[in-house]
Length: 167
Image (tube, rainbow, N blue to C red; front, side):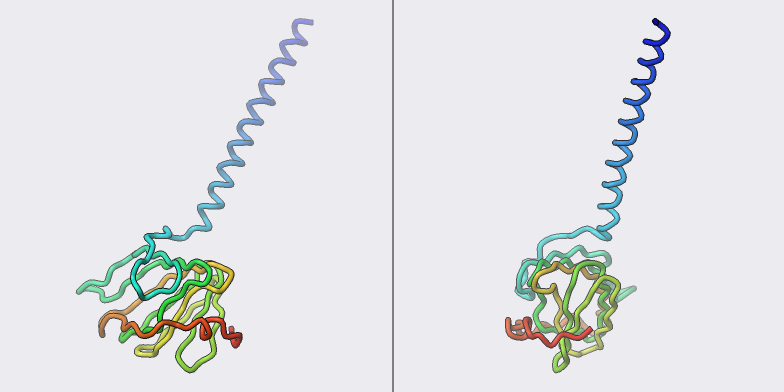
């Protein structure tokens, strides 16, 4: 009888230990999965007048005299967007999460999703930002060799909500 109680006790301890280990692995797995979804930190809230709505910037690389290219991670909350602007040296946008918009002056608005890449030609006015209902995250690679961005007028609500969106 004593042997049976000892075996049962050892069995229960083993089950308890296994259950704790499995729970910890599950917790670690959940943390790892959520960490995988965040490519770069969200950064600081952008407080200048070049954006409508709430957006955040995490500078990854600042342009300097050796390499005139800046790289920043920008997170737009739903409805947030840049003003119309242009880049004398051009810009590349890498969509990393959410749903966003990109539009060049005189062209239809494009819908951007994770994995999309946009090449903004030099000196072409454009804007980009989140869709109406979904946040958007992009990595902006900006060549400043020919000058810094030139900020223009705000994107009107009418321009922003135009239905003519192309992929």
